[in-house]
Length: 394
Image 1: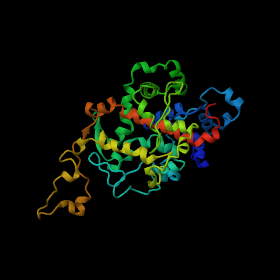
Image 2: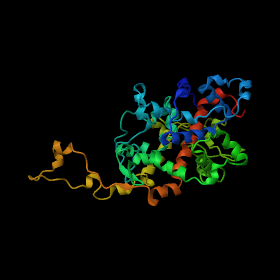
Image 3: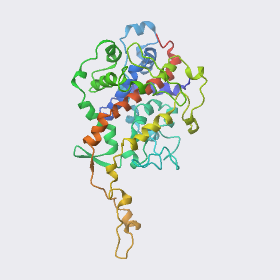
Image 4: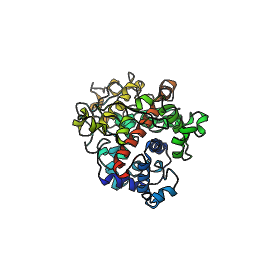
């Protein structure tokens, strides 16, 4: 089992002082953190809460018995890395929220990384963050937002579009507007607690947030046994060459095979698993494989596509625009004066449409990515704290 330095523990401890943010970006990370918390073994969550709130003294059996469960929520700290990235002492972490391939050009060509590799330093991106105290943030959403994996137009920040008639950019649509729309579309029955064993498993971790109904829907329709995400969720924590077996928990939800391995069934060692193909890139091993996890997410920029083809219709892409010719027949773009002018912009593409937003909603694209991020975060936290937590079945 992977061992981590105390820097990971130090990060979680530091998160306790982070203020709560209220933008959807923060809410999206809170949704991921809540899904992760639902899947954490009780001893692991107790240990994490004890680190976040030392006054709880949860290392004492009597103190644990005196507190209700769960003793804390991970949601309020989920957006910490976004909140501190602009502070001088943390500016070095800004590039750890994404990884951009130099040759990436969706929707026609999604390369990862491509012949010219990644933009920026190889030690300062979302993959490298997985080997540092940024591990929680790296898995808490950023790696599962497809445009954080794209090298074009700064992950879509430079691609101007409209949403419901208002000017925005493609990155903002994926960072917030799609989920904000989904929150408004949650069926009313999810405003009530889930019943039975399902409710016992989920409801203690909800705290009256605006997205509670959304989490109920993701859990009930997606991650429950027989749900639309059930089968594939069993593979979300697998690394290349890992076996694919999983059993339902007593609650009716499945824990992916890799979580089961982290809960004490050390299948990787028992089966003599070999090093996965992604290991040569310096990030993947048989327990944590960010490259293998992120590559399919990056491909969504072309396959879905996340990057609309409408942005590249003839006459809208810079390479399709006819050059301006001066009186001497010279290309004006070749002059310093011309290149200093702002680039031309095509008519903006509206994305709040049945063909774009409607397709994403119907195919549960965003819900799948949030659930995947939550399950993977739970697996990594379990791996980090399993030894210190003791008996994971207590």
